[in-house]
Length: 209
Image 1 (cartoon, rainbow, N blue to C red):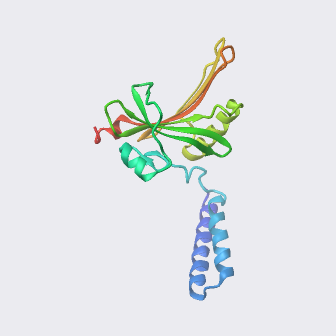
Image 2 (image 1 turned 90 degrees about the vertical axis):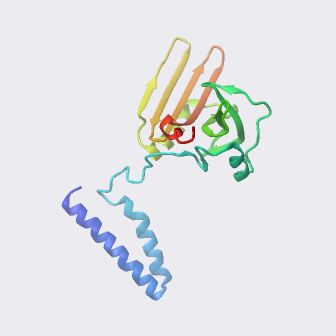
Image 3 (image 1 turned 120 degrees about the vertical axis):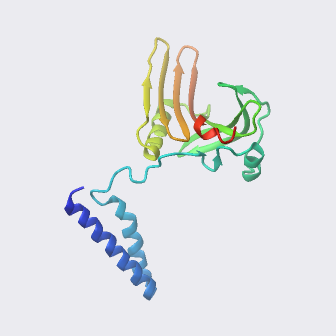
């Protein structure tokens, strides 16, 4: 950032403080409205870092935090329910709770909340694209853009076109969580998959285990 831009941003912040103080003193609705508009616009001033508001970590997904028990999550969020049949998933995880419908923008997904086998602590959450969604590659790009806006560029990006299978994967390696966005499609067998997997890192889990 150049000295001129830095001084410009400093003056803008000082001006916001003056407006806010005046609004408190006189209770003027119009001054408060102007203050709020200026506060919203401040992050967009030239010279502000683009990733200033990006998150650097995730300790779960939404309000489901790593280390919560299944009972705690179920009590806190009545919309969660137990699956009709509990199944082992890849990596010896067990599905314990589900949310049948989750909207991310216009993309319909289901939520699978998982624990390791013989554990009651939530350490993995998988968002699965609904079978009703036809344009999965478009959905992949939409979800990828959302994750990039929130956490920055992925740590790893892999595209693996094979003879019959198309696959694209992006991974965000955060201190407490690994986020994997995975799209796979095989035209011959009509196999289609699009998942976002949030998984607690071993370093985070050590105090719980």
